[in-house]
Image (cartoon, helix red, strand yellow):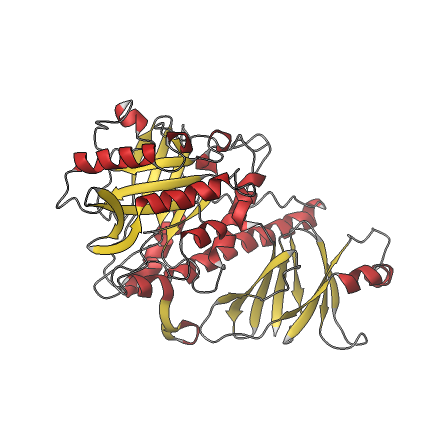
Length: 457
């Protein structure tokens, strides 16, 4: 079994196959580089080590760092699970990396090593000068839709809002209806039982906790009961509840523009898919937060709209014909996360929804797929395909850079890489493997960066 091992960390990592010292294969993998392993067994060992000096052999470095390697080594199990095109390898909590294994072919695998980020507070590590259009924020579509399987449910009951926030979710899609004068979470005609005030309490607790007070959240608010409640009444209820709820108005960023991260730490950025002309809000539509000027229903190729000095590119093609359209859905919803093909004279913000539904494939099927697609029995879901796309983008950049390194004889910082930006919302975000896709999306925030560009310090 041949394998490519791609190191996308800033560490020099030693690789050693399983087996005795006499026949073990040992390699040193520098930062942002790849190497080919002739034979990948059922397990191998990785060591955190120092970069070898130019006049040191790998054996000499191994002997010199023997104690360090013994104390910081991790055995990696490569056994495969039928039906998956990639997986996250289980590692001890103290391991500084997150490792993914990809099935390239029956006899070819790829191992991608990434740094482990603190998903609960990853935004605290980014510069204040970054505009929110220059980050990648994972989000959940229909954040509070835990009931109504299989038609209305979009998130697992095991991932309530506090869990989502600690898992790195930063864009919340809150759908509400007015019930007896108070706002309650709904998805279509299905009640989701959570009062808006409970949602606000959870958000306020997260943003005021010492460990996460430098984070920010984007909250999209949309009316679900437009067939029985007037838009004006709904807008008035939202205004009242955020003004008098936990954190009050001070918790909210309500300007109709894309702020920098420093402006909104510890706050919620309003993304208002309600309110029309802003009646009853201070400043009208200028006081409703980021406020779309248009939102065509299920536009396959996406659409754009202006937000002050930013062009917002949106992809929300949700009414796909059937599960056979999953590959096309993934292609369109991921492509928009890359820079525009034509240089835009103003900054761009991308908002993309990985969620979709169809009479021939309900939300769980679209997000999760079914069967064993890797052996031709079933369909791979959107989430798994998105994860594979991000892994391919990151590792492809490493392979390209490795060729440049051979020509230029220099190493490249891990902050370089593919520029993937935007707000990405998904259903059942922990599937296909727990905490598999969201860490990949978070990692994009550390790639494709150049000093002085996009507000990067």
